[in-house]
Amino acid sequence: MKYISTEKLIIKSWCESPEEGAIEQAKAIANLPFTFKHVCLMPDAHLGYGMPIGGVAAFKGVVSPNCVGVDIGCGCLSVKTSLIEISIERLKEIMILIRQAIPLGFNHHNKAQEESLMPKKKYAFLEIDDGFVFHDYPVVWNEYESALKQLGTLGGGNHFIEIQKGSDGYIWFMLHSGSRNLGYTVAKHYNKLAQELCKKWHSNIPECKGEDGLAFLPVDIEEGKAYLREMQYCLDFAKANRTLMAERIKEAFNRILDNIQFTEEINIHHNYAALENHFGENVWIHRKGAILARESTIGIIPGSQGTSSYIVRGKGNPDSFMSSSHGAGRKMSRTKAITQLDLDQEKKRLDDKGIIHAIRNKNDLEEAAGAYKDIDIVMEEQKNLVDILVKLEPLAVIKG
Figure 1 (cartoon, helix red, strand yellow):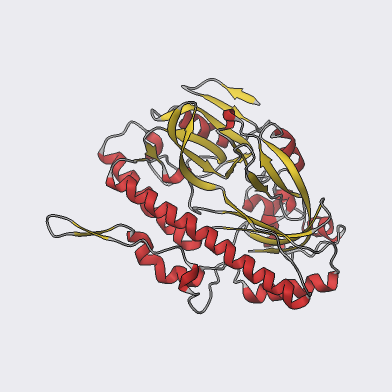
Figure 2 (tube, rainbow, N blue to C red):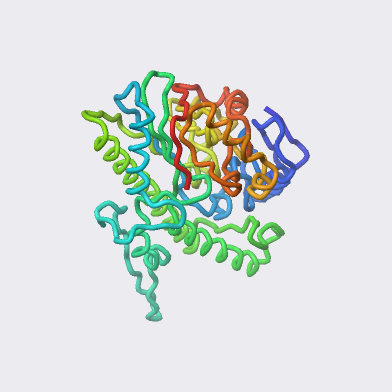
């Protein structure tokens, strides 16, 4: 672990060489008046909005929308199948069916999905004395009909579906997705509201200005309570989104192969805030690109396209607020990846491993393995946070 002790609170970094931008963001958080104990950087840490991706921080009495992120509830789902082998031909057939069943990128379903698959509606209207009607879930209310068409869709960027071979001898599948436009809209709405309130309060937090800021909402005011309600709905929606995609993937397997059995899914998120007890106090833990690694908690740490992923068990390390990385973490921006990586070399890297992959043209390089840190180094850096249960090698990949 690397210690940075130049600020009001210590920064504990499991990343041996964090980029300067991520360090500066961690320093800003370490100097906030409501930050508790210390700030953590996971080994996959890199620059984000306000808070580094791969950052973990505990706040007393407040939440910060930017420290959760714009894809609220983004996370991974993994399922082990009863298969111990699968041919390239069957893999390709399954991948075709998955692409037909699950919209990618900005695409949504043409029709609303079954409403019973959505998180339970928790709508309520509050009558205010002056006659004004306030809605408990204003953003969710406005976005609900659109969300019905987004349920069971992958999204873009680093979201993926992958079929893998595990070190336990079985075929697995994994997917990475979040709350789609619903979470993005909730995040933007409340970050803007938090910025306005910070300005109104003359908060002495310069980082609360602008898109990259650390604007906050006290949890005991109505605006903070509303964010927590809508954030939780987005977490529930993100899990339901992954669950529906998993069902469609299982259907694809079963259409091509007979009598496939599936284990219970592992379904976790890595962009959220939660009230937890650490070092004897109840605090709002913000995990942005980090997973819960409480003792015996089962987690998922994916690699980059064409590299290993891991099923892990948490060790409950108190220094990390019982957290670990959520993946490999970027080492170069999307723009740099497109301009600096060699297309033929990145394709060859995957072709040589026999992986059915998604690298086709120059723009696809933003999600090439060369744009990410070495997942094996990341795992070595956090060996006091998690134990590896299963190592998963990619066989076929669909990118958003």
